[in-house]
Length: 122
Image (tube, rainbow, N blue to C red; front, side, top):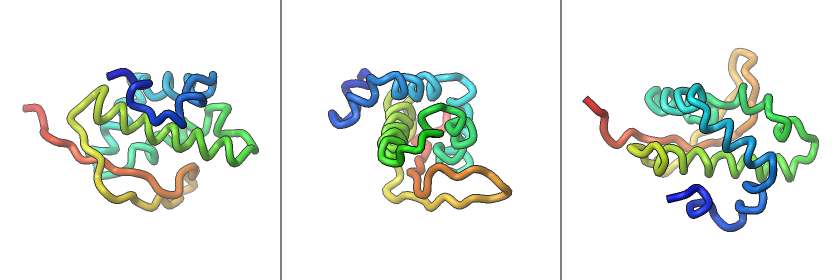
């Protein structure tokens, strides 16, 4: 399954914009895949683990709150695709968690999805 087959049609226009492609390229970087998988292993939201690096992307520095909101939603959807389809072996948990700022860590998301590992490879 391709990412464009997975995404809701409302995300396709922004996914195809340069900012959407920058987010997708960012998420596929090996160090970010490690961040995502480590967050899941520790019972945290992958988006929380990615926030400091995501904030370096130009789109998340914009003053256009509506545009930033849509790209945050796209990011969450892309993380779900990455874990549940591209990497595989993960499942979305039914409830979201509240994200709080701690120790001067930047805050981008107020709530975020968490995932569970379906099975560990021995």
